[in-house]
Length: 69
Image (tube, rainbow, N blue to C red; front, side, top):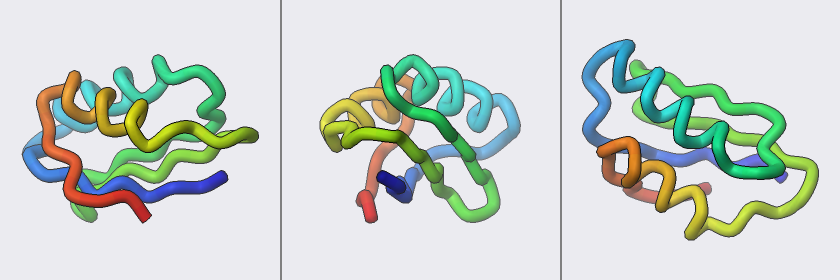
């Protein structure tokens, strides 16, 4: 499973670190790549991770999830 999260509100490398930290707390995620320039995070997991879990992690880090692809 590979998903791209489009995120609003990131403005610096600290934001990237905060979002990365929150996403890595989700069980089952193998890869977490956050891009400030693209305003997105790409996550990969061996099994399906609920979109709600991803949304909660983004919001917990203080950002807004626009959409998941």
